[in-house]
Image 1 (cartoon, rainbow, N blue to C red):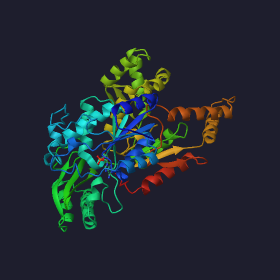
Image 2: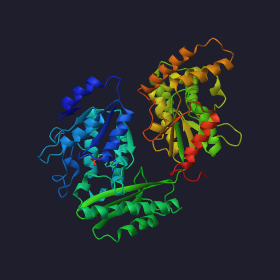
Image 3: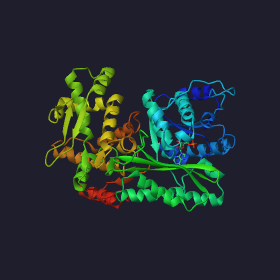
Image 4: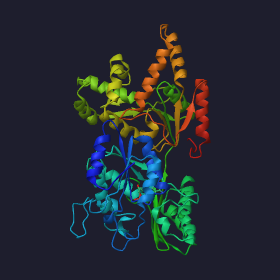
Length: 514
Ligand code: AMP
């Protein structure tokens, strides 16, 4: 592992590794704990090179806050990163980050006023401006493909997502779930300040949020009632002084009276003299089941049938890619002209109408029903090259995520559980050995009257395809860290479906389907 303190050093290093390698950035202020480690692990499983930045950003502390006291332990952090397999740490000092001691203002990035009018914004004037400025600088210095942030700092995450969108920064932002101690207390570098008694009392923050969640799951949608549930758990503790308890929209951060789709219930409180934050996402969403896995493991057959058995919608992503291929074919744009295709696709509208009664799903492109038209051999020939284009993938991933907001879907694809629905309720990685997949394909060929196929050749083809799929820069095949692997060797299709249904039904988060 390399440790760089200068932009020049890091830049030179990255130039040497970047070719054909994806880079992930995990920005931190150091004093690394399990929360940070989960971000690093997630990055390790999704990109080729992970850079962790460690920078206690003076711009995000106000004069009366704990900048000088904030824990700094670079050596321990570096050892931890090395053990985890991080490629490089970037640990600049304030001067290297362009922050000078004179109070001369540099260029700053100002988040939308509405996003800093709620939660921590009013209590920490200038904080999110400081965060937005430094994160923009870090993204420009590292130029990662993906950057990882914790849901623990939910307001920060929403502001960064907005910033990346508004400033057209070429990076994918991924939010990672809150990691908690066994007691429920969210890991935080500031937990080091707590005395034993305070640490014990601090658990009430989580208990309050949990109590609200229980009420929410029982059907309560009024935010004032949910907030009262949190308060009730905190009142017995004298060391806890609440700064705010609010429920806002998770993306816009606007205050909510009623949770219609999703709410972010967030709290900030002093426990003794330590300020802690915590939050919980409350989603009115039916489950999402994501099925990934290598080609030839039977994903599409199985996924359709699981959807049917569980009375959920099968999200036919394949038909959507066919729709895009049809659009390109109709336009007459040559397949090599990727930029013209990007423009065409980004302006087009796609509509997926889920299957109803015995009707198959319908696909509408720019208002025209193309359900039949996307099945021609000409379209089939174009699907693979078209889906390899980043703009096409981006368009469809955004659309699929939009459809996923209300849940109730089963979807399959190479990166469905890692990229499209990273917060799916159940993730299955459906796989089978190369030999088994080759054998199944041979049976298919025989049933089509093709007898001259060689089993060894099929095995080599499958191995090659696996290698290609897991090394793609765009949407590589990777098993999500929270996916359940299901090896289908020796199982019939019916047995596989039954196993998946059992997994879904035994999953704690998988609530009633209807
Ligand atoms: P910090 O070092 O506190 O600035 O945090 C660096 C990153 O780690 C931020 O994206 C945080 O949201 C994330 N993080 C901090 N604590 C946790 C936690 N308990 N669980 C998940 N992510 C966390």
